[in-house]
Image (cartoon, rainbow, N blue to C red; front, side, top):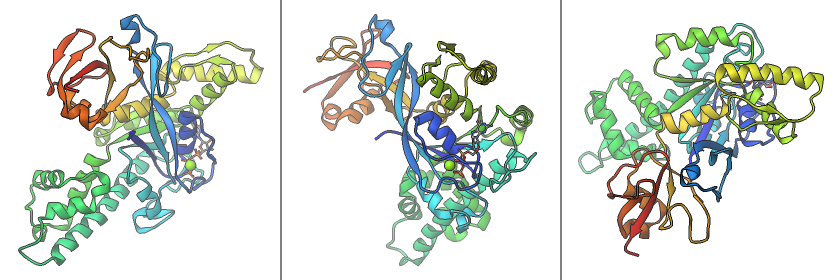
Amino acid sequence: MSYRIGLVGKPSVGKSTLFNAATMNDVPEGAYPFTTIDPSVGEAYVRVECPAPEFDQTCTPETGFCRHGTRYVPVKLVDVAGLIPGAHEGKGLGNQFLSDLNETDVLVHVVDFSGTTDIEGESTEGHDPREDIDFLERELDQWYLGILRKAVEKYEGAYEGAEPEIEEYVATQMDAFGVSPDLAKQVILAQGLDLDPATWEEQDELELARELRVRTKPMVVAANKMDHPAGAANWAEITEDPEYDHLTFTPVSAHAEKALKQADEGGVVDYDPGADSFEIVGDLSAEQEKGLGAIETFVSEFGGTGVQTALETALFDVLGVVPVFPGSAKGVVTDEGKVLRDCFLLPPDATVEDFAYFLHTDIGDGLLHGIDCRTKRQVGASHELEERDVVELITTA
Ligand SMILES: Nc1nc2c(ncn2[C@@H]2O[C@H](COP(=O)(O)OP(=O)(O)OP(=O)(O)O)[C@@H](O)[C@H]2O)c(=O)[nH]1
Ligand SMILES: [Mg+2]
């Protein structure tokens, strides 16, 4: 039931490095294309400020952990094979890669902002990262278009009169992307199209596919390898280019995050993942001192290594997920004496009632109202939850 964040991008941009840094896994990384073939799924975390201190308590999380007042809540991260132009027609690892993205809720497009890899991930210099952004969006759109065309073919092949409407066909074909008949219909009409595919031009179909893709696979760009000297110029140019206003960018150094996590595990530094600083607590070799010095400059300039920020921007800002803590009659302590045991990640615009059903059908069915554990005030079933709400659910059970 946890959210799945997919890492996408051409080969050699650092998807696996970012995956390893975020999950402390050890999947192969390499300066050659298609290092990754089979997708890996790992546990990463998103940060949520812990409410326990507001209640003069120390939390005891059931999943994830809490470090210096920050909860690290588990999410699934998916590392997939690199994608090259023409993938939707089977180039590179082609369609296999695309279907690995089926069940992801949001994408982090990892882009090499150092410009040191060409469009197929081979070593070069001065490559414009915009080409990568453009082609990836195009590939995803073509992938959706292929599926949309299947829906149209099926609709057209059905007997006239008795068959379901076109939106039903689209939803059936795009079920894995979470396209419901309602959404399909809404998007078709929003594009100014009739609910009759016989009236659609080729361009209409492409725009429709693109809109369905944008709605069901929202995306953040992780501008990786920003530790490289060429990164800053690319960053300035691209983030100021109005053509890319529709995207959200995060500056990232997957290398820096990985080095800091390793140094933390080795007892050399004290580093809270995602923080914009760290403390040196062990003895350093001259080489380590130089490396950590460069990383210190990076994290203070960019507000962190960007790995955590990329995942959190994807989940919270782009997807709109709401982290909520269940409270109890004793405030934040459970009957077993656990404090703020759970932090649940709820879908955008979730209400108190949605929260109840999220926990259990019986809780949803028996829900009377909620209590905001901070203010001790009653909140109705239709009350929309906000991030970090601590809510007790009152039921008939
Ligand atoms: N300078 C720099 N290099 C990086 C960074 N992240 C990854 N790299 C390097 O980029 C190369 C490719 O990294 P991978 O993680 O294997 O890339 P990938 O996107 O998983 O590649 P495929 O599996 O082939 O699709 C490796 O040599 C990494 O060391 C970074 O933040 N900065
Ligand atoms: Mg890889």
